[in-house]
Image (cartoon, rainbow, N blue to C red; front, side):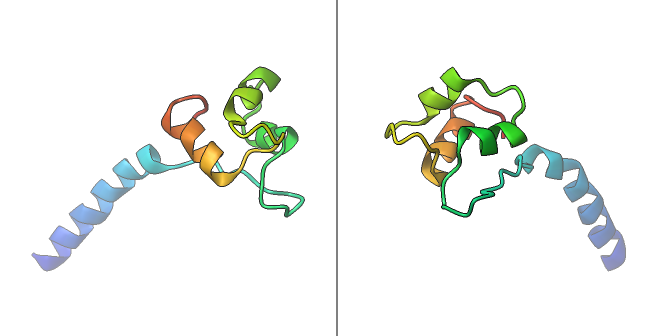
Length: 78
């Protein structure tokens, strides 16, 4: 019975996992922020205007907090 419960739990977790999956963004230059090009590699449909909207502090880069906020408010997909 214990094995059955564990198996059912594992199977149900597999069905839920895609809902929590996030697109992986790579910081290719290792500077700790994401450029337009780095984000566009992960989000091919990203436009410069959307990137600018995400860049709340106006530094020309997206930091982890700005990326998370954009994901949470639906500006970009998870």
